[in-house]
Figure 1: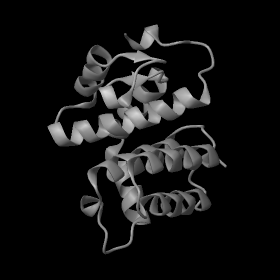
Figure 2: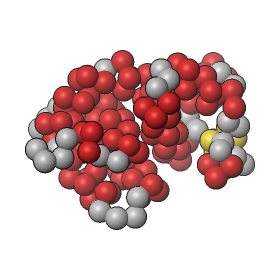
Figure 3: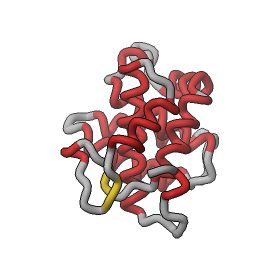
Figure 4: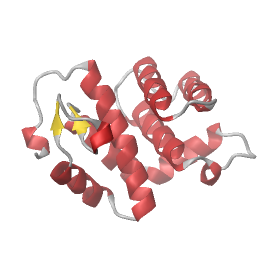
Length: 160
């Protein structure tokens, strides 16, 4: 399936949440493998089934908004220096980006990109990435995500 095969109608909220989960996975894969965004996106589209009956547990992507997923992954990688600079300013001095769990790092990069570089309202981005964080983490990480993204939003760098 290619991006042009993705549904052009208004995607459901769930498909956008799933796109964000898949984007975090793709960003993690980019970092771990050293592959660029296009290579990873092509692998996702070529090897992962995208359908309402697919499952992340099976290595597939259930009903994701592929256009959003690709926008996030491409945007984060193209603007990574800016995103990382913004993220670094939000983290405590004793927690440099490199100290973050790689999945958490990808999640925060994606969220920072969406808040600073897209027209999606901040409150939607924050709520969505809190849901994503709860899917990946069972400790204090979701609270950290909420605090960081709320601080970014209050600074007025996003879309309220």
